[in-house]
Length: 196
Image (tube, rainbow, N blue to C red; front, side):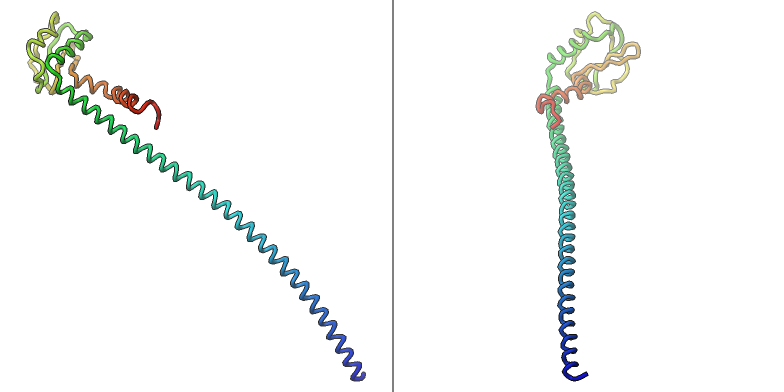
């Protein structure tokens, strides 16, 4: 083969190699474009999924935090309401301590009217200074109730002992026996019957 023929053959091989090279590069670029496009789509899909999961987690955390704060606020509000009711009850107790002998006598008479006791013994509280002999005589009129020889184990009011049953009669004991009902009534009156 001549040099010319070799050059032409070389030239043709070189040109075919260039065409093949261009074809391979074009195909590679297309594959790279497809791969990049798929990778970008996968990335966007994962980002949207992560964003959705993040929103759900954020929403749940937000709802949980709101619920916790709401419960804490309700608890604190309830404590304040109970504290306020307790303060009112304390004021009532103080006003009971200031009742006059006439008011105490009136209270004892009303309470004795509802007491089914006809005979027995009575005791006065160890610190009772609002009930005198005249009051006792008046409220026990028509009953066979005499002064007990036992020492009183309470401080205020009157205790009637009959047939092994003790009846404590005082504004303080009446208040204590009705405390839950009174607190509920005060609470409903001040704050309504709602659960706020």
